[in-house]
Amino acid sequence: MAADLPQPAAPAPTAPAVYTPPVPNWIVTIGLEGRILPQWPGASDSKFGFTALPLFNVRKEGDPPDFFGPRDSFGFNLINLGAFQFGPALQFIGERQAQNYKELYGLNSVAYAAQVGAFANFWPLPWLRLRGEIRQGIGGETGLTGDVFLDAIGQFGQWQLSGGPRMTMQTTAAVTPYFTITPAGAAGTVQTAPTSGLPPLSPYAASGGVYSYGAGGQVQYRFSPQWEAHTFVEYQRLTGSVADSPIVTVRGSPNQFTYGLGATYSFSMAPWW
Image (cartoon, rainbow, N blue to C red; front, side, top):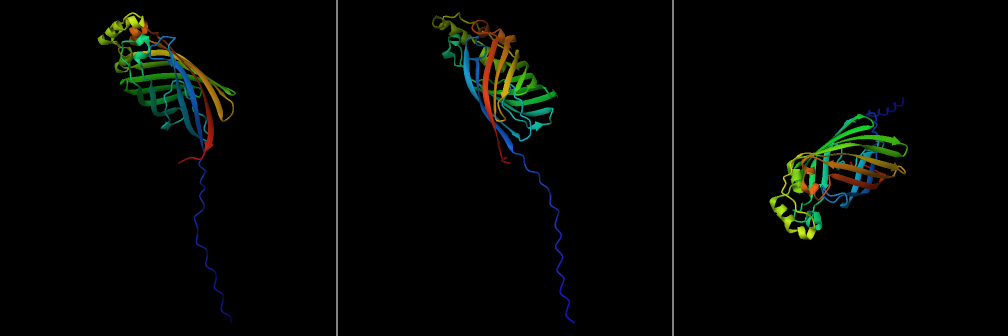
């Protein structure tokens, strides 16, 4: 009899395939914003400067766009629990060149400053955001600054309207470079009075506390999923010790306005990690 043919070996068992969901793309937003703002802290209503700021944000595809208020510092979420967000905050403060403005003749110039700290957002309602920031100054001023902003946000088709009250607090070290007048500075305003045509200033020591209160509003319009434009107005009323400084009462104003206009472009890209 013929020998039986050998049976083929059974295939080795394999692990079941594991489904790996695709990693969502990033939505990257870049843009530019121009601002008209007081030429220096406490400047009069007629003394405005101009600055331009880059805009940048990254979010996952499918996530709603983040809300940014006009006075928010640059930052990103380290913790995002939906109704609560927390992350770093960074802000830059321009220099004050005393020799460029007759209102500041005789006073000290103030160098650029950076403020580094953290922010926290709380959303008690889907359309209401409470934001707090605390930042440490480095450079021209070395004090602490704290901000509290409340914004109501309304979506009306392609339009988004937002706004609410604001309050800022600063320590003595933060306000001294801008609002204190040393005896040497007061003497400098006497010497430069013939040139400036302004009355001399008396020595004054500014102290910390509530720096300002005010309100702001922003309008955004979405032309397409890619293009968006916005404009805003922010008002700060200086108060307390800084508002009593002769730099404000004699040569400036407690009313501080900031105007802004910007545009952004968003695009999708594969994530880097």
